Image 1 (tube, chains in turn yellow, orange):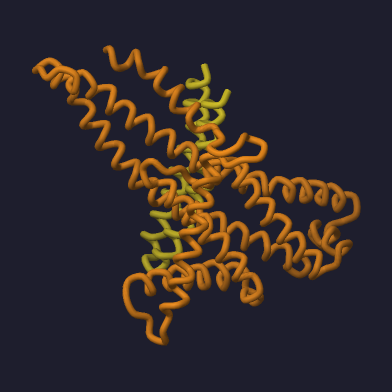
Image 2: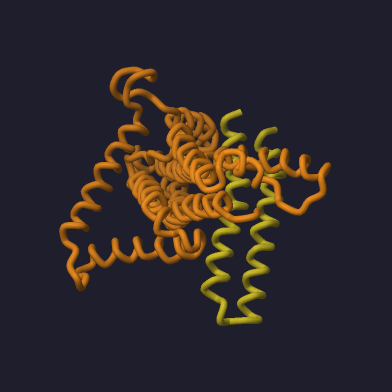
Length: 63
Length: 265
């Protein structure tokens, strides 16, 4: 049961990282000169959302 | 498949190996495997920093000095000057200490057979608590205790909503150290569990071949090549994660310091 719950929970984190990558790529395509800054922000944003997915993973293992 | 039936048991064993166990003494007053590697990485960090200071010249020479200097300047420009702003010089020592401590712990943990000091919730909770006390202290120093408590709510909100917003802001303030601790701990813990699971799968599939060489067993051992390939990719990702998590922790600490010291928030 826990594994199914984790699978459902990771949908949210996956959507969030996808959205962040979408925003970063379209920003880089519109304005190539902000590439460096946009990439840093993208890495930060995906680290935040990835943490949510990993919290689900750890809770699944512990419970 | 025989290998798949053994898998859950092996993974349970792996997870139980990750809970803190005392190496010297007991759990109350002793050294667990995490605090042992924490001490080792602290010593490594001290050696690195003191060698760096001794070797420093006006024009940096060599890979080691240039590498450490690049990291220091990265924290200085990207985190301290970029996020904290005009008062960056006061907070730079704290931010650099946190960054290098987490970075060296994460990287020591990635060497096979060693454990990350930051892989135990107690260590990350202590780091987050230190950060929390640091930025609350500097907020209180700048605005006074009453002024800091008042500055949590944004100025220019009408009276009844004001109290409501203040309660929410206090709640989010208290959540900050918890999220800092859990983010770092979960990243380290989950990354090592995933790497361990793939290593276990590779060894379980290859085991029949090692016991008795035959064509059937060689065919059964083929998937372990794929597991090893995935393991190497995850290892590369973990190298990035080790750096990014140290960076994220430092940036968030800098953001919280900046918010605590900001005027008219």
